[in-house]
View 1: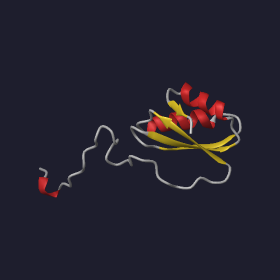
View 2: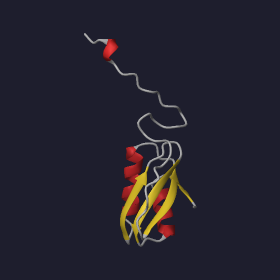
View 3: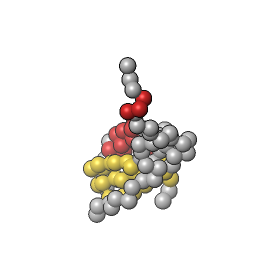
View 4: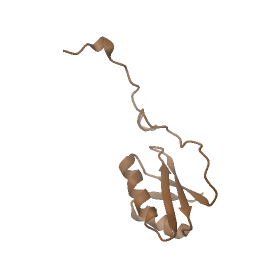
Length: 102
């Protein structure tokens, strides 16, 4: 059937660091001019990311919203355009996640 000798052992995810394929800290990519960064807690997967990105992208003045996922930690939300930070906070909390003041 299957030969176990040819299998590659993958590291197991710790409960605090997320899964083995995702970084535990947001990457250090640069934010373009006019972009605003926020921190969000409670996101654990791609579905969480899509939920928040969709909620924030729907706000008036937002050109784009993207998240760098940090499972089990503070994820980085980058918003391009001209959105009110109070509206961004309300969109994040309405989606069921925690908005962190930077």
